[in-house]
Length: 611
Ligand SMILES: Nc1ncnc2c1ncn2[C@@H]1O[C@H](COP(=O)(O)OP(=O)(O)OP(=O)(O)O)[C@@H](O)[C@H]1O
Ligand SMILES: O=P(O)(O)OC[C@H]1O[C@H](OP(=O)(O)OP(=O)(O)O)[C@H](O)[C@@H]1O
Ligand SMILES: O=C(O)c1cccnc1
Ligand SMILES: [Mg+2]
Image 1: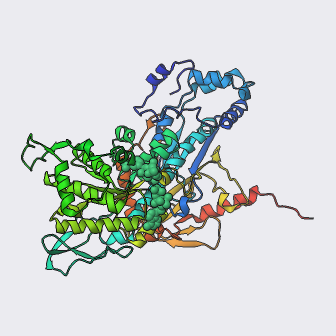
Image 2: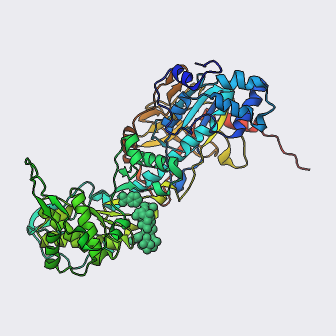
């Protein structure tokens, strides 16, 4: 409903008919737009065009990162924006005094902008988290020309980065899993077998495929079944400001990341947060004296309360240092690990590369882990933040397994090996090829800045006005607009995979249906066509916002969307997920749409004359 002009913000809030939350970032308001949207709105208003019925499509032309798919994200914030769209009195005051708008008639501000809301806007959209492909609208807007045009930039900014970073995250999660891990997915810790084996190999297996078996403490033979590595987002410090950081945390979780280090994201989105410690923590401990009295309780046994006795940890650590002859390790680092152990005995995970990863960090971690375990705790693992992550992770794993056997401690088999340091998709793929023992990747800079491609090219185009399809031509075929309001379908084959996306102009009589042969044409290349008999037909767009009733659907939780993303990825042809030369997913149009597009193209193009 349009609120009368001159209402205060509080009153406008009270007239809002929906319970939709406000946009997460309060910069998301009608002034978060390009000036030209407002100058065009004025021209539409001035010439009496602003109420003409129009239809817009928001889509991209090319998948990012050289890939074959894009995850659609950001719809939730689009809906919040539309539901709360109102210029405030201050906004109007600012616009009225903007030099470029100085000559505009007062009624434009007082009658039009002051009363403008989205009550005449209707939005259809793909489900948030959908795998999307070039040219298929992510969302469509049916609205009077004035308001439909005015929301372009904000909608684009609300969709472009979330979709880009969600896609980036998803690609990293797929790369982190790798082909190798598929065989052994989900099997952790190692499974014990009954046969007695030969001795474990002497070398760590550096750069080779992982050793297939090691001998466990009990003398049984076990396969090394590694876990599917998980990805944790560490990017806040490198992101494009607070909104970039927060959005990255949210949408990389949606794309399949396991957790974030961003505490605010944990609070506001109820998503898992995770973290280790930094080098500064290790650097700050200069001697063992600093922790000589550090103590903790023994862990409670199952069904029992923890006792009250406080045990000093350092003597136990030093006893193991003697026993294992690890006397040359760095004392300050050992002190830091003791300090961390008494503070977080149930989640003891140490950064081990401050001084020397293998000679000091790894050994110090083992010493403190043994002592902690004596008191009934299960240490969590280590983090590597420099050096050759393949080599170092395999060396660490090798020593852990050796310790499991030598010291008779099964927990060494279950330790996490976290790796960080400028990780990107290439590094992940390269690590898979080399072999590694990493169970978790901490990824920051390259994830949140989308270093491999810093922007997604979503556009927002007018495709129909007054019920008449509009075309936009270009020398670049990729940029030619498929005119008119279209209905988008995903056609599935018998095996359950999506075969292609299919666009049909709204006024066509024949829509695709299960079991019926349909001709699917490349929109521009006449010879490219395929006949499909779909086993399943899914309409891709649903009504999500109807100005009269507000948000109709489209606000699932991030958790639900994440699950939806995961389900789709698990049901995607392997060639589409391939890193190098991924397969191309077809986006086709109906025969009628093809003909109509090319007729209109001819009609709107003048015949050049050569003399
Ligand atoms: N085995 C590996 N294969 C491919 N890339 C790797 C491997 N190990 C590490 N990398 C990557 O190589 C790069 C190493 O960067 P760089 O040389 O700047 O770091 P470093 O010297 O190891 O550590 P520091 O941060 O202390 O400088 C990182 O991007 C890292 O992710
Ligand atoms: O490398 P990223 O993917 O961005 O992951 C986040 C990085 O942030 C932290 O250290 P920081 O980079 O601040 O310092 P460091 O490189 O000296 O460890 C952490 O140790 C990672 O290295
Ligand atoms: O918790 C961590 O280990 C962490 C968090 C942010 C950036 N780098 C590392
Ligand atoms: Mg760094």
